[in-house]
Image 1 (cartoon, rainbow, N blue to C red):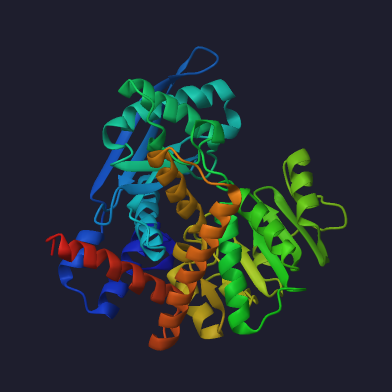
Image 2 (cartoon, rainbow, N blue to C red):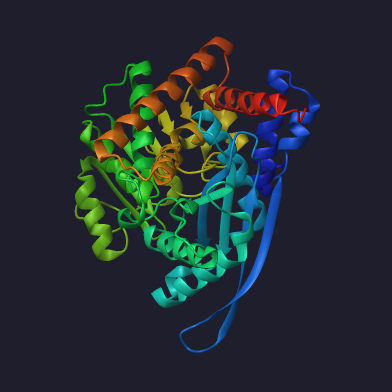
Length: 416
């Protein structure tokens, strides 16, 4: 596959094929996993504030339910498209399997620009989308969650709409909800916290002292912002961060919480006192111990990978590194902590939320964080061990571990 296409669906298929080949699995495993079990495209009208009607397109992809109900986020983005949603649902399958969660992968999206919409328009769109996908979701079928440009309030509207359609409260249909209607403590920082846990473990393996370690964060949204703050709490120094509007770089370091406050006030990290702006490729090429890509997919590619100087890359985003770039990084000796491990904290705490909803019994934030740390460290150790034993990259080891787990479930269920 020529990298110029950068099609995430093809990248996901390639990763699955390589794992199946490395494991010597039956051809049927790849044939089943190379595409979603179910894919729904919907178009639905929404009345805008000016009285006009706008028709939106959305998708829900359910990759496999071999290990349990499908699980995965919903993103509202102007560049969302079908193949992206399919790929993200496939990565969710292996993210769940990596952490040993009883889920298959799901993902959804709407092509829209929420930055240009009012709260009322976003609410009406969210409710209409839930009505459109309601036949295929539910606590026992498919449990959506927040993703890019979605949040607890949107999850609350969608949960309410699903409950209205069913005629009873069904809080377990979605995760990432506000605490008052069944959300879990610790969910807001879970993706970032999980990433920092595995980065910390990787630093120990490489003999990197977190106190004073230099960190670059690409994408200062929810995951990137909290990752910066949490890794700073371990003694690391955040020297650069960026977002869609610009960057902030200071080789002496910046306070991550003050940087987050600056972005909250101004809309961007750009212009943070004492820092200078730079391009995305310049940021990715900075000399640092740890690079955390926390934006969108296809950020580190064959075109810019030669400039990457980080020793550890913790993928807080989904699919930020292309296969071609991944090979280069492995040969350079960069330890890449793949997305299906490093960004799995969010879905792990979503699993905790779902469990709490089913029990109607809720845990403290300390309990949630402690359980998350234990599961992230166990998953890291298993994959790092396989990486060393087989002499393969961390990504290959993670996919081998996850695909094998899904294949075992399909085998005992009689699918293959």
